[in-house]
Image (tube, rainbow, N blue to C red; front, side, top):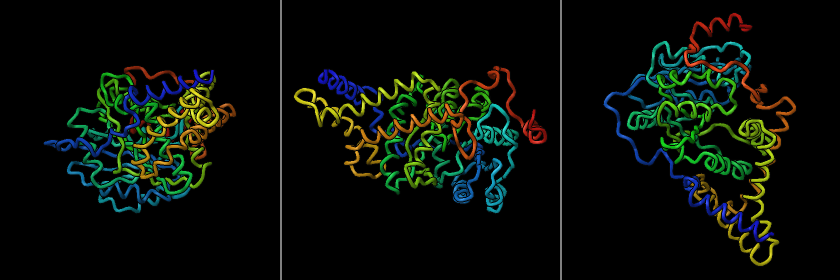
Length: 404
């Protein structure tokens, strides 16, 4: 029996290495296959939702205002009812007329906070009909050439959504242990090569940096079409891929300013959306836990305690997963020996997933910035194809009368 389990695990890793979109190679990157510059640089508006981001907002917005972009470009920051002076700090930045800070309306029922803030920024930006909308988080710092590269790639390849997986911090020991694996697991779930292949249905994006073609976003129904989604970036990617090709890649140009000092903070980040990824299904949760045990934990158990063929298949599977982890470890500048710890790391992420389900059952799912946002069912009627997008007039009316 143990030999059969070992053979199964080894076969799974053989498939993952050979036929699962090359997810482990970390080859989809923005510094490869540089795109030619367009003849005309299109107009772009960056939308930045911010809630209690006083510690990072100056660096984040400052990096946007410092973009070396030849075309029309401005930034709209939506202060999502911050209590720490985020909006005031942003208003003191010298934007040379390119920065607008608006105070967000109260959060209506049926929306997650981030998407509601983004939708208000999109409504304000769309009045000027920009060619592209850069949806980016308030805790991301951008290299000066980031926007130029994004737009160049989008224009050269006709992309409706271009996204970068911002490089996360790996300074503390919990970050060194868990953060490279976070991106590794994401790529396993959504192989970037499949995401970037128009012939495949796989769709994903990284919410920290997403350049969306405005007309395609409007044709897809706008952000209100995903207004209840906790995993907003991948939901938006699925929406946009129906309108045209999308692209997702790793980058060194955009970096997270969000440190994680301990395991608990990383756990909160993962638990916020893990159960939503499973569609709030107890059956998918059981299957995920069982799958993680087979794929990651069985191999070291067999390698250490199995005899004969079972032990050798366990060693082979453990070696395969260690090998698969190496490109991501190199990308993050970590020692290759961390690859041996992948079973332990997987066990920790499994515990985070169980915690996410427990939080959801207790009514505290999707916790972020003091809000529990996880909703197991669509809270409002689906958006019709002829539904109107959120407009500035609607935002102002909701600000004056939130009960609407």
